[in-house]
Image (cartoon, rainbow, N blue to C red):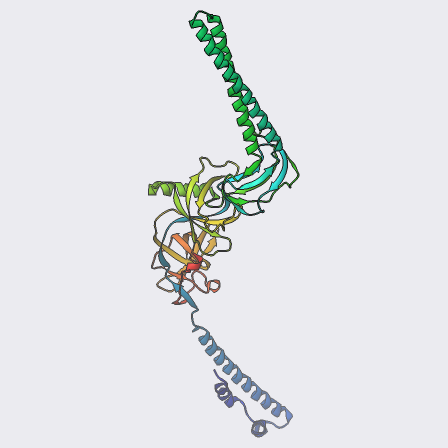
Length: 424
């Protein structure tokens, strides 16, 4: 009720005191005179005024209550789930490791005389890295060559003496015993020559390894010794040796990651269903990348689950032609398990935890909100995958979740669910 209506309702009950008083006084004069009659009339006028105001207030409150019962229903955005063809996949966090990694150590000892690289360079197979003083090994090689010449001369003499002994035996001037003796001397001389040749090869091996070269192409680390240091070397590795530097290969590179037992079972069952080989395509993204643009191949899954961690080790090989991937760095891995198939998606904010399960709010044909339990998957395109519990034509609440409760009636409006390729 507005102000004008209230005033009109109250007008009959509001009398002018100057008008009411003479009338009341005149009527009271017929019955009795005096102040007592005037006071009674005034009380009656006030009572009539109060009754009028009460009636007006009752009428106004009744009208306001009827207005409250016609309150509009809350407007809530709803939408059917977004449907896209998506493959089943698993995601992991992995760490890069070099396919080849070597600690460069000397096979011979001596004083380091030269470093032939710059720390952090990319070196190629066969490049000279370090030089050890070759003088002691040159002397050893000269001694071995001299011994070889000595034994060779003795072998020549033994051969000549054997020839003479055989000629004398044919002319009956020599004996069989003499021939046998010369044959033994010849074989001993041949053995001495072979030994001398082995010593020459041994000395040459040591001399050659005073020049330390790169075993493969890769990136070299810092040098761990300086020129002038005495290097300990051992060809058999039976004694302590000095580590000089490290080299890691660059292209390709390993990406190691671990699967939980549940993830491994999912992977194994899917592989059994697909009847495919263990080798499979993986997608990789670095920590500063939003999209998965690098491809690799899953080429190894270990043969047992680690009892301490409950995980099983797996490895993928990733091409690294731009040499951006670095051993020790981290990358996200996506492993596809199946071909794309129709999948329902809803906003992640529409999925609410309910103890050990998840629920979404849906709207029925009567526009009443109800809670529906669902099985969720991973995030795809910024949306949550719904594996079961929803139908393609269900209307899901996608807005005003904090003010919408199961059992309440709403006024649904059309909402939008968008798939973001940048977040897929």
